[in-house]
Image (cartoon, rainbow, N blue to C red):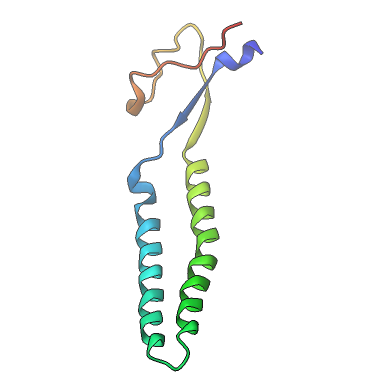
Length: 103
């Protein structure tokens, strides 16, 4: 269990990394709402609600998968030297210290 102190766990995810995914999903939902409005004038408006529900239901798993894989791609677990642990800190996390377990 003492070996855990020799690693640094860092998440480098920023809003810019997922911004494109959010925009694409919002466009998808907007297009589904537009198609629902087009179908609302039809004889069966239930199809309009079913279209929106189907698009949102089918797109949510892909959005979740994209978010999770993006997050996992930005998680770093790097070995550190215990004697010079604060010397080799990446530029974006200068004020953070490695996690230490109390025993």
